[in-house]
Length: 148
Image 1 (cartoon, one colour):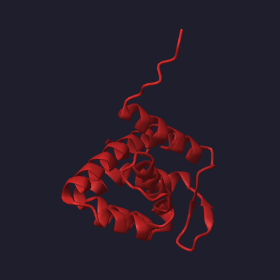
Image 2 (cartoon, rainbow, N blue to C red; image 1 turned 90 degrees about the horizontal axis):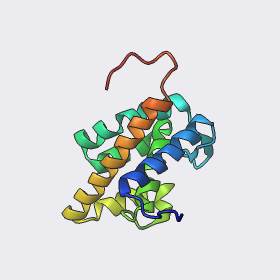
Image 3 (tube, rainbow, N blue to C red; image 1 turned 120 degrees about the horizontal axis):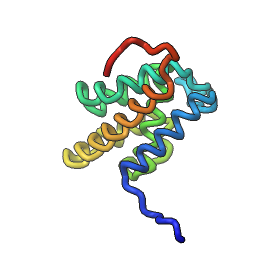
């Protein structure tokens, strides 16, 4: 029996987000801080920003959300995870944007309105998976007492 090689985009989002969450959980996800130094993602901080990501995109838009996430070392791992997904799916075309927020923000800022809507829709769909999986696998054992 042969394997079916076709997966939906939603399955691919879930798989990519799951790998990143597992890497955070295992202490293996690294990111570059604002000084360019390689750091390990903090489980609690990653979960906090991942859970807020969909609301940030809806409330502020993609461009301000990227700028906000890139501006703080605490949220930089979530920034890199989101931008890496957008590069992987072809919404962003320059792989160096993963570690260079200036280039990512400039690329998004230069998009026409229809492309901006498309990339924002994709970012939001991915953010939902990152949030769900963070809640499932990175939350405190006792629970954080919050409903979503």
